[in-house]
Length: 420
Ligand SMILES: Cc1cc2nc3c(=O)[nH]c(=O)nc-3n(C[C@H](O)[C@H](O)[C@H](O)COP(=O)(O)OP(=O)(O)OC[C@H]3O[C@@H](n4cnc5c(N)ncnc54)[C@H](O)[C@@H]3O)c2cc1C
View: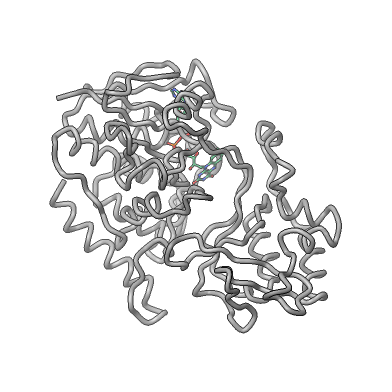
């Protein structure tokens, strides 16, 4: 049985390594800490939570809660540790981050089939079974190596715009333009109120290493608002005379997935705090009661254009022995990174045993993440956290939709578990 190389002992890498080892497969796990740290990592232990200590909601009312339920059914190692060190909280799974990293490190180091190498990987054997799990701050040398391998630089972004669900728009205040966008007009008074609120809204404090990547061509919307009242309406909020007759300014919404159930606010990359995004962007009349599937964020992020280079099993199309796990693969968030580590390990086990790989299907959260890598927008691909918009829609009354989606997902996992 061949050994598997796992590069990066973060959330995805540790989950993958533990799963492989527990299935009887030897793993060489490479982690550059404590010899070298990314700008956001400080703790020498593995699976460091670099920012918040929350794995977000843990109830079935949210897609992230359903994803956790699926992972627990599949004996996810890191989630079991997170549960062990959970802090008292009503709805969210919040952990003692020090204990969490310590216990993950201990579990990995105690596993007889895992050998840990404390070294930076700058290149690797392209023929060996390998899982790349080096995260959004993958070291420069490996980023360059991977860019050369796929023939295109890995993606960096400095800011990402929020996403809303199409179902939650108020269509008495917006319309479909025939260029495929949904346009949300504002009159002069609405625009000025919006602009002033944006100028005063609270921003997230950036790390030093993030400050340098604020490109002039991709300015956060609040920075534009602060430059002058007319900047936005001559930029991303400029009305199109063909569709927006009489509007003083317009917010355009662009499809984020093939179904068009998720829409991003074009040009609205932002670094406002999440409550401020909800407050200020809800001043746009069509978005008054919007469901925010993802808020905008800003930080350096290294990831592969998954729809172009990966298949839904997280394998590099040109080298099926190489899998990408975690944020570098195009998922976003702590629990999504853990989930993709588990998915990669499940399918790496099948791959080296010569068995067909497992597609969880878009009626589960795990499968919805798989599918996003396949169907994301190839021209503007951005990492995504789990949300209801990624799942196959269900025909049910609005009130029951979420509980029915959750039930359907967990029933499917129960069946698929038999195949593991
Ligand atoms: C600043 C910042 C804040 C974030 N905050 C949150 C948050 O609050 N909530 C949330 O859900 N998500 C957050 N994210 C997004 C994401 O969920 C986390 O980055 C998550 O840790 C990603 O998991 P991962 O396993 O893909 O990578 P990581 O957990 O980052 O693990 C990657 C590991 O690979 C190692 N490594 C890198 N290059 C090499 C190399 N060449 N050789 C060997 N080892 C290497 C690193 O040292 C690291 O230990 C944040 C991201 C960033 C950058």
